[in-house]
Length: 281
Image 1 (spheres, rainbow, N blue to C red):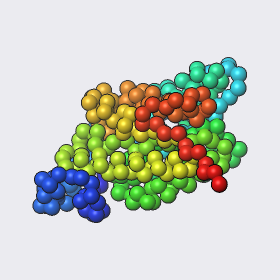
Image 2: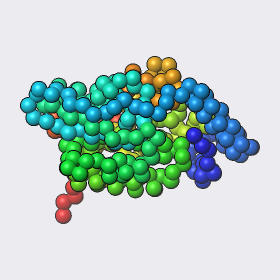
Image 3: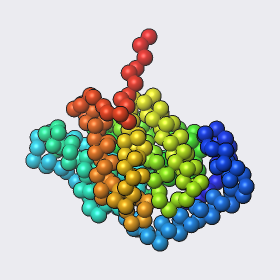
Image 4: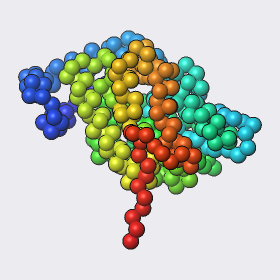
């Protein structure tokens, strides 16, 4: 995790208190650098590795019909912190999707730990040439924030990701950037900055997804409070990645939009958005 000069361009417009702005002005850059280093030391000391469970399996194998479910993105999409494949977001959603549709669901997880949005394009490039997903879940953004990738670059890459998945025949569900303020090793004011920056990116991701015909789910809105309230149960040992219980919550949060994308449900709860209908005329 790094701290970047770009913080200062947007601080004044983010609604921070006068006291917090003053603290940042008075040696704020050095303070943020020290806080980021301290958080990194804690996370690395509790490291859970960088290998996620293998993400390919057919759920409901004996059921008639078949849905191809693709998961792309970063470590959350890959399931780092889940002990077994069935505890990952992809595994939980594939199982639930099979039960609800009465079809077998082939889960293919192409997500890579540490990926930024631009790297998701590489994940699509590496898919088998004849692979055609029916549904695709995109979970990405956290690494864009921690590596201070410009929002414009992140959403441009996301737009291309969506378009390429749609070209393969997939209905796309985008899970927007989670609230990085839930990362417990972060101290104030860095925690507030991380929360605001991740929310800013999440809003841009939602707008991009909807404008390109994808479903969008705000992880910050639908699971953010529970992660803030129960970090000991929602986060893994490193206090950075979700625990199996945290992945269960995220999967439950995503399921309504995944079902809608599969044509099963149309009523979406708060924090979920359906694609915008095409303009007429």
